[in-house]
Amino acid sequence: MMTQQTMQAIRVHSYGEPEQLMLEQIERPQPQAGQVLLRVHAAGVNPIDWKIRQGLLKDFMPTTFPYTPGLDVAGVVEEIGPGVTAFEIGQAVFGQATSGSYAEYATASIDVLAPMPRTLNFTEAASVPVGAATAWAALFEYGGLTASQRVLIQGAAGGVGLFAVQLAKWKGAQVIGTSSTANLDFVRGLGADTVVDYTTTPVESAVQDVDLVLDGVGEKTLTSSLATVRRGGTLISIATPPSQEHAQERGVHAMMIHSQPSSLLLQTLAQLIDEGQLKVPAIPTFPLNQAQQAQNISQSGHGRGRIVLRLTTEPTHHR
Ligand SMILES: NC(=O)c1ccc[n+]([C@@H]2O[C@H](COP(=O)([O-])OP(=O)(O)OC[C@H]3O[C@@H](n4cnc5c(N)ncnc54)[C@H](OP(=O)(O)O)[C@@H]3O)[C@@H](O)[C@H]2O)c1
Image (tube, rainbow, N blue to C red; front, side):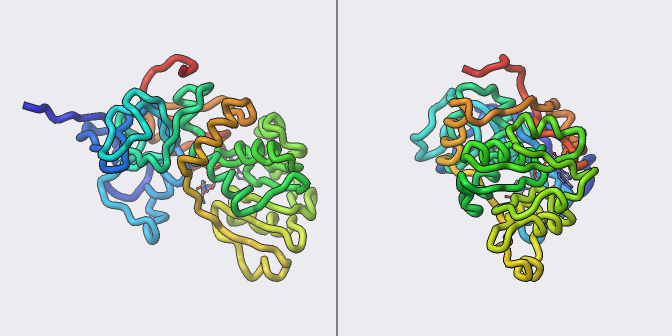
């Protein structure tokens, strides 16, 4: 007789505060066609995770309860779903989970999965997918950033911003980042040419006529973002939608984007990481049973880089 396979997972039973994140013993998910089952080694904690939990996105991303949170994942292929030939059992991968990555096992669609960068461990790899893929989409796919341009990155110390600064430098652009005083050196260390401390300096007084702004903060910063873009330039927000009226008054193309990693983009990012072009900074980690604390910190909006839940102990570097 087959015994039912279970796992530890975080589950949310209704919208609310971090206390809604409960550690439970539940059934393992099963990979469907085009999916694999992963043994999760690490799960990234993204702001969208707590926004969904609070019910902030319920109008356009309705949730069925109970659910397991978490998109960013790094782990090892445990089982292959029907029709999957691109991955094999035992392979280390990273990408986006379908069934929720705050769990010992998660399913993932192979469209949003790639072999893990050889030079990263699982914790580091789980910090990459949403952050780096969003930065790439904003700068290059929507923003059309070129080597001769200047770009302002608002929220440069965040999980998206830290990759945006590095990717824009890799492209050859001139990069200005904003952060609080505590993160100035961190952002400089990522390669930003100039860092503006938004707690002491109005950003629009220090920065003018940039070609592109990536706004990773939203709401109040959109005003300073708009004021810094040259006429004919572009403002890409990933947090809240910019005012089209104000953008038109200033002759700026402004948009809010929603990005999703693809397998191909994850492979490109993995290559840049393994070539040493894209670095993953030190990562604050929590065990699965401290998901509440991890989301609390994410929700504060003032962390440094991506927070990661570690589900296993692992050597420093995966080979
Ligand atoms: N649309 C999409 O596809 C997409 C994808 C990913 C993320 N997002 C959204 O984009 C936002 C950023 O995501 P994330 O993962 O980078 O968040 P995060 O890792 O939580 O980073 C937030 C960062 O914002 C900085 N910050 C806060 N207030 C600031 C201000 N006034 N000026 C400049 N920096 C400020 C903080 O640095 P200090 O401590 O130095 O202030 C912190 O490092 C979130 O709202 C997230 O939901 C959207």
